[in-house]
Length: 114
Image (cartoon, rainbow, N blue to C red; front, top):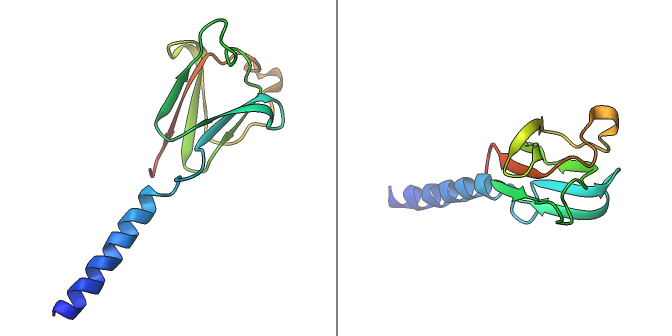
C-alpha cells in the first residue's frame, strides 16, 4: 500500500504544478509601440495591470498587441481603467480603423488557467 501511495502523491504534485506554471517565463500579454509587433514592447504577466498618465511614454502609443492563448487583455481609453474599453483574446497586428491605434491609456491582463 505504501509503495503505491508515494508514486501517486508525487505524480499528483507534478500535475498540480504544471497548470500553474503554464505562463512561467513568458509574458501573457505584450503591448507594442508599432504595428506588426515592432518597436518597444511592454510585457504583462497574468493578473497584471498598467496605468499610463499623460506625459508617460506608453500613454496613447500602443499600436499592436500579443495575447497568449487562454489570456485576455482589456484595454481602456483613459487612465485608471476608465472610458471606452476593448477586450482582446488574440493577437492584433494593427488596430487600423478601429479607433484604438495610439488610444490605450490603461490595461489589464488576466488568464484563465494561471
